[in-house]
Image (cartoon, rainbow over all chains, first blue to last red; front, side, top):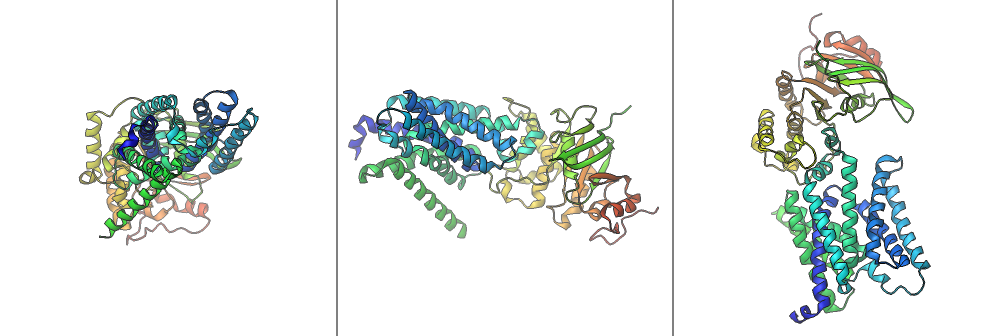
Length: 269
Length: 248
């Protein structure tokens, strides 16, 4: 079993699992407590437009996904605040619009697109070193932003109206938070793919929420849970030769079910 | 001349071209204890939000302590009608009140802020519960924490939106006693749709249903209330076995 650690692609996979868990622990905590799961799902699917654009322009699709997903998160955030259509309608439109744009761009790209599936469903075993570096830098941005704006993010998550009354520019802070969701989506795309990103963004934080009443603790616990469950999923997929992204999501979901059952039993006693 | 806490002149507000407030003129003095009463949908919360600067007026002028509304330095404390947070939001009582001391970007809470939080929690009688999770509190206790969050900013004007809605009837008296204590240092404006519940405690009332029908002492409000609600109103308080009206 330890033999697999000697492969360099396995070492990259472990690094990717840790980097992904940092993003999902920090940003996922806000996604869960501010209840922006649906908008995060929209951002992750819209990011596929950026992947397609990257192929079309012949640049690293992950790099193209960064501005694309930030832009789509800002559009969703502004539409949900300012325009008189309901928020979930706006999200639903951008969700499918982004995916459609991605497919059109890939259509327009000459030749065969070899690793398209890895962006849709993830492939933790083939994360190149370049992408690991990008993920590391994005994680750094996320950590610094969360440290600097901890009070503001807590304020708008708990009571947006009151935060506005005491002088927080709540709309800008909300848009900053959505940008962090966009960045963490980019961090996760290579590991689980745009379609399954939302599982990583919500499940570790949702499990952590069952065990603590402090945002900081919830983040740390979610990072640790993310690392354990992602690497657990990686092992299971290696042993049974299953698709890695989907297996990781299955392990995450099982983890959530087990934790919920344990909580229920604890409360019943 | 003393500057009034709130000065509202000829204000109109429309939502989707539908007038919510019309020709509102209202002055609130710095030591007022005012209840704004009116039916649901009559524009009471909107009026508070104008004072807070959350809603901008289509017409007319609003001055808060002589300044424009929405200025974060305006000394206003606010208790929202519903705080629609997730019931198990990971935050405890102390942190909730501390968030009321927010100073701006990159400014950490100081030791002084923490002392003010302790004082505010003591004042509302929630100090011994400062480490409790918010979701473990009853409606009345939560309300006290949110009052503490409002007064921890040391406001000169306290706005309460339907403060009685989430409090058990037996807790209401102690809640009014708290307000009586607070009004020594600030103007208090509370909004309610329940005429009887508030009229025995406050000093002045304003009756609002799109227009302002009456503003003045409680004793003389009955006839205007009837006009506004279009039915006879008895200014008897529920649950308190004596007449609310003073002799007049």
